[in-house]
Length: 43
Image 1 (spheres, helix red, strand yellow):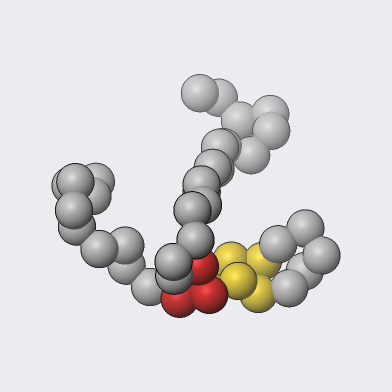
Image 2 (cartoon, one colour):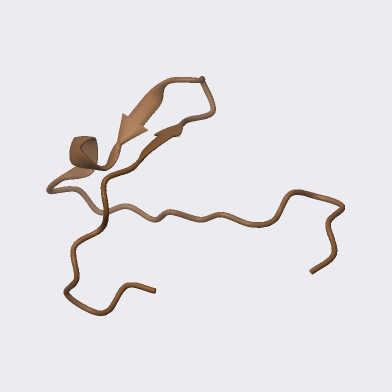
């Protein structure tokens, strides 16, 4: 768990078009990373 003011570790994710987004691409922008368990999993 990150603490307030702690930098985000480096990461890469694929967007809905299959394009890679890096957290460094988002510097200076507001963004929200939302994730959830795969559908049909308990919890």
